[in-house]
Image 1: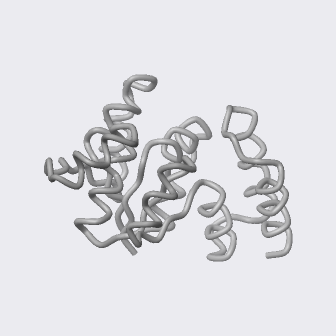
Image 2: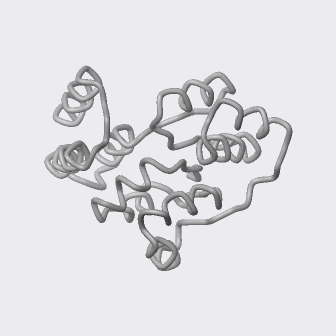
Length: 160
């Protein structure tokens, strides 16, 4: 499976030293160059990291009229990731609520960091305990999930 990714989950996974999880879940993860640039601000070594992992592909996103419209309501990374997902007709990893809503309105299938953990458990890529631990560490590192979503994700992880 191939998927497009926005910034947040990549940053979270990088901080957790778990970017390889994406390579185990997906054949290819396509990242807009703008998203890579956003990540590089806080993590200049990300270029080297992505070069060593064969599943990541960095692409420039064409400046379409739809992208211009998306940029009026979303940040650069979200808008470019949504546009790339639309062009390629692929699902999208996106965590911010507004971006998720816009993507879903455009008919894009979305998942986020929590969804990736659930998918990794279901695919037997990681054990439940590791998934819960990654969720806890992500929350400690600043990932924001509502209490109800956090509880829902924990229950799903522990029921798998």
